Each structure stands twice: as structure tokens, then as C-alpha cells.
Image (tube, rainbow, N blue to C red; front, side, top):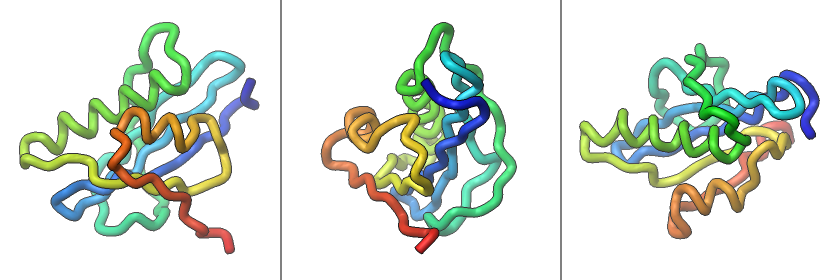
Length: 118
């Protein structure tokens, strides 16, 4: 169970060099919401961004919400022939695990934790 309003943030790296920051927000014991930044950014480092709330899967857990984000990102970038080539986790919140990311993105897609807080 996760405390209310905890957000795990991360950035997806795209094959065209752009990055899309996203998050999974815990809304209580069993409620989650996928978040996606309104526009891409140039680097994987954390930024304060404007998020759009995506529709959450009915009765979805955190991993289902991550899958919604991955599908939405792939829909956005497939117009350019791109794909997700990496993922950077920004904080210590473990709503979804590194293993969850690797499973949804594919075993060859690197997933790393950025040490932004030194």
C-alpha cells in the first residue's frame, strides 16, 4: 500500500533524441493515475513539467498504469518511426519497479536510476 499522493517520476528516451517525462501517481491504497508531460524535452534530467493526466485503466494497478503510459508514448512517437530506447528513474519512490519497466519496455531497453539528489 502506498501513501496518498506519492508520484514516481521517470523519463523515457526516444530514438529521435527527444525525452518524455512521465509519472505514476498514487491516489490512495488502490488508486493510481498515469501522468505524461505535455511536450518532449531535450535531456533525461528531471525538470518541472506540466503533466497531462491520462485515463487510468479500470481497476488498474500501478503496472497497468505504466503500461498505459508506454502505449501512449509509443503512439505519439510511432508517427516519426521512433521507439523507446531507454528509461531514467528520477526518485526513490518504487510504485513500479525497475523490473516492471524492463518487462514492459523489453529486456534490451536500458533502465537506470539517476542520482540527482547526490
